[in-house]
Image (cartoon, rainbow, N blue to C red):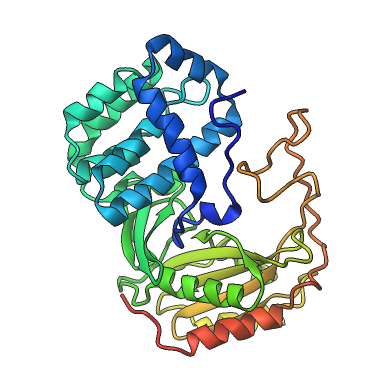
Length: 362
């Protein structure tokens, strides 16, 4: 048995924007705490017993502890996040592993560098080297956005958007009402010098909560991109420029394998949101019709999502988790899958109701 194999997270626990308590956190925290006091031989054995499932659980736990630490200004929770991040060894951690986010959060909450050095002394050698490297960069980091995350404020309180590593570099752009470091990614781009005016995370949360209240099941809110193919049969670019773009999936209790994607974007002044909404609805070149609505610079796009084979359990911790031991991911897309279980118009109507209310501004 691996150290934490008997624990699992639900899909909703992977939503770091609408952060909600999970009993799994305390169960994994016990294992993390045990690792900090274990004898060296026991600690080595723990690492040897870990598998990919355990590593993914620890990654989720680390992000959840980071959110909890920032919400409560807790040094102890920040240290738990760091301890979880450095617990695995090879092959789950390599010299390329990035520990800047848990380090930055720990330091921002009052943890001193010597505490981090002491704790990493028991980590695998490759982890020690990576942490030492990342500690040296902290003097040049002034904001959490520079280490791969964005903090947002919504009706659920403080939350976190975890950015793909490729989205973090040296150009200052915007997402969800917060500045980020970005380049070379479709997540954020604009040819306008003006700043966004909408708290995009707040709007997206309000729409997702309203969809939940209507009896649907929404997935975690995450960074997304506005695909240009929904608006033109021959788009000149892959993605529509936006100030920010977030999204979530929608499913039903009766058919958890049929999904609809909801994408919420704020557009720069040089792009007409109303025109894009009309183009999406009237684009006859697609096998599956999209629907959209807008208000001001905010666009909500509702589109059919690919259907995945039943070998793929969306509630699993791993995307494409191997369920039969043959090391195959078992993700099979059926792009023409029916979405009759979910009315796109119903979701658009819900979004219109939210956009008709006072939008949270930056």
